Length: 276
Image (cartoon, rainbow, N blue to C red; front, top):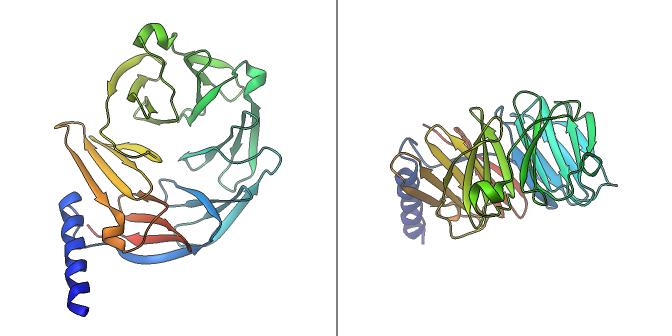
């Protein structure tokens, strides 16, 4: 039995090295953030972790695993999306009431935006902008809209039905390198400039529902419940990693950064070190 498990471990190591060739060894468990009622999680560029529980409480943990802040807004319904691209301005979206709440680094509310009052009736995706604004995609108008800190419209796309000859329904967006990347599960990944002008489109190969997506250098990294996919924008190759084969646990969601692997399991969020 011991020999069999050693072989499985070695196989997992080979899989890891094949998918992420810069990694020197398979990931090692660093810590666990407990919580059986975690619905979703996010990780920012400073390795702060944000856990959303079933009561819509958001707990922030620092990189050492210490709980440092908490926010909860019960009256607005479930948290539909979070954007922690900017750790100083955290965007939380509540789709039931079309509300956006901005939080500071200590999870204290900065402002509260009612998208209905701004004429945005069917938002399907939101994203923080590095200039202090934020993006909204209104599926009803088929437009990208950028709002500043005073909620004024500072940029927007033309009607995408005319521009693209199709009607995308973006479910995730993020800003990277002064570009807005918007994902539609059926049509692919669309790229716009900082004014909302369309640049290009990528049809991402994926057989499962995408939960998280981001761009790092020349790669698009996206995850499903238990699979990490890395799509190379230069040679158009796709590499995938089944997290269960590496960690031995069945995850509900996964994420990876340059030095950590995050796996949401039945007992909480397991955080693994990745050595390069």
